Amino acid sequence: MKDKIDFSVVGTLLKKQLKERSSSYRKGNFDAVGFILRWALVAVFAAVFIIFFGRFTEIYLSVKTDGMLDREARLYELLTIAYSLILAALVIGGISQINRQLFDADDIKLLTGMPVGSHTLYAAKLISIYLGQLAMSAVTVLAVNLSVAIKVSLGGWFYGMTVLVCLVLPLISLAIASILSLPYHALKQLLKNRFVISFILITAIAAALFYVYSILLDAVKEMMLGDNLKYFFNEAVMNFLGRLVSCLYPGAWFANFMLQKELLVSGIGILALTVVCLALSMLIIRSLMRWVMQSRIAGAWNFVRRKQSVKSARKPFIALIKKDFLQIFRTSSYMFSYFSIAVLMPLMVYFCMSVGSSIIIKLIGLDCDLELAIFLTVLFGALTNVFCSTNISREGEMFYSVKAYPVDYKAVFFSKIVLCMIVTSVSQLVSAIMLGATGYVEWWAAIFIFVSGLLCSFAQICFATRYDFNHAKFSTEEDGEIKESGNTVSTIIVLGMVIAFLIGGSVLLMRLLFTLRGVEGMGFLTYLVVGVISLCAALFSYFYLVRKLGVKYYEFSGGGQL
Image (cartoon, rainbow, N blue to C red):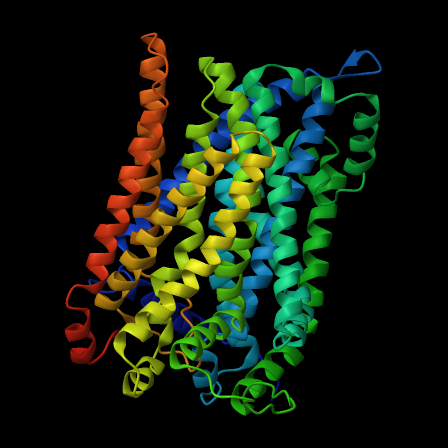
């Protein structure tokens, strides 16, 4: 019997997914802090993007080529590049979501034993992913189009076609993502047990993205400080952009459609691309879905490796540190979130320091490099140390096995503290060396930033470890991997950001007030305030960690389930 899509079953599967999603908002499962933080960040991002992209639009539309001003051509180029970038982001997100829904989802193995066809299951999963992509498309496309509409007078057609673009872009992105999902999964499987190569590759990609981010920050700085960005778009740059835009399809078709240019050709191109991509994706669905369902029944791929015996027995404390290190290093999501971000922290500090220093000097005429360096070091240090917020939860059911070992509870907890401190110490040290070598601060000030950053990190690690222990939630996954962040992670992120803004904001405000009042030589207050706050935070968090820790450890009988 030919495998056809049963839309009644599709509806049932969609209701199932909706109930599973809504269950995360129930009391006890709802990550209220993370929910508020995510939506606050989305709102801030949208507002900032509209402001700065609107300013960029104004500058770019005033760029001349061959001594002539052609605002319509500039607008076409701008929309083409913007829609192409949005489509690329949607494709990347779609590939990740398809792999997560098909290869990593828990319900696939269960559904393989039910009378559910592969096409039906795929349709349900794809519709669910499309709705998520639709939300992302709406946010990004609306942000771009509203930024443009503020600066350029456009008719009702532009606003009507905005809705169409929001609906069609996810269709094309999912069709392309469906085709690329299998090669992506094969690459993941190839690198699955090649941990060093995976770490280097992931870190290199993240570093490249941060480099692009630094370029954008520099462009934002130029827009805030003047119109210097306009002179970047010389004849050579504009010629390159012209050649690039001529190759960016379907972004160019969408831009033409929005501006009522070449409507027939653009419409046919968009329709043909959508149909072809969907047809190609459907051709691989049968083999893809059957292979996925069979692989979930048969189990994961097995890698045969030469067994190595332990040459010598290790001390329990060292063995526990190595266990935690290998658990993180051999889990790709942990590796990126924990180790890769720690490696990239100095880059983040450097990029933001180079932009923020000149902006502050331009806006308030005050050299606050020391205060800014302290703020950025504490802020990015707090974001880097997020992995300490799952020190207990990521153990999963293995925590009970460790508890049964003839090992003192102090070794169990402080092995985690030491590992976290080793990682953050390297990041903090490289950041301090970078600040001193680039001349943003004196070397003795760099040493102070390193010490205060370590104290703040120690405080965060101790507090997060005990907080996670008090609210431990173990994953129900077979490998114990935490797929979604919980309240603990969100709470630690928010607390770290609050402390960073408290320290950085207070010393910056004091420096500004004393300078405006003509009081000189008060820089020592920065060291005093930061030193006192960091030391008090470290002492408080340490006592919070060790208070009745032994009693709590031996009475611990079970964590909740994620």
